[in-house]
Length: 371
Image (cartoon, rainbow, N blue to C red; front, side):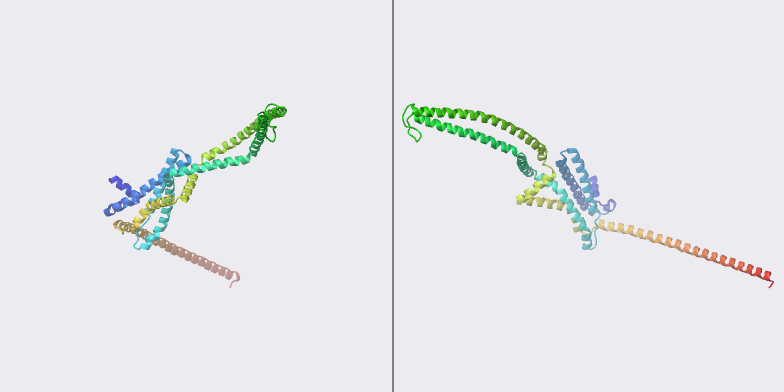
């Protein structure tokens, strides 16, 4: 229990020696540290899942997730530990506002991958729908890229239509021949039963229609087989192009695709939009909880000890600074005094030398001119 307490103290960024002197503050900083720790854990899980959707590999996702979780944990610990309880509320809020903004940004980053995991089934269904749309669109685009297939199919339909027309004509002649044999009176039959002159003519017409049909069917079938072979060649080329695009369509399952699917789902469903908002608010509340705890909690003994410790450091710094300034000023004064003295002495020596030289020159002139 003692080790766990110290661990959460560490997570909260508290000073152990000062916190031991403030036992009433222990539970508060245990709660703050636990919140910071579990926020880091959630961040690690979120980042690991996000990277797994990208690389589809466990170990890189785990390593990056741990690294990301540790970074978020360190940032949260810094945010909480750098806050100080001030005597004025505005002073505290002025320091807390940038930290709150950073905490909200971290919460949004952490929550998004977990939202993707929570709505995974709905997102998978939406991605399947989009993938189906992409396949249909890809096939339509490929069909536009191979207009020869449609032209050849129309040609086959034309050839088959010619055969159907010939069959219809043969059937019509067959009905007229049967009507003539059985004595049915029509516009093209005599109405006399038996195989007479008209019946023989109808029979000849039927034989000619059948021969024409057989000949047309044979010729068109050869042409149809040739055209179908051409169609198969073009379809093989189209299938090859489609298979080149297939990996991109099947790989439409990355992080960006899932976020796009989630965005579409929230636009289509008000319930999912509300759930998405509430999840983000939950993570924002978790991320900002340690900051608000420090803001709303009263100033306690730990804060007094911490302020006293920092004041001592500032006072010690001020004393050192004052002492250093005094020593520096003393050195400057000494330098100035010795420098001025040396300069004055040098001037005196120069003046004395000039005086000696002047007296010598005067003596030389007097001796020269015997004044």
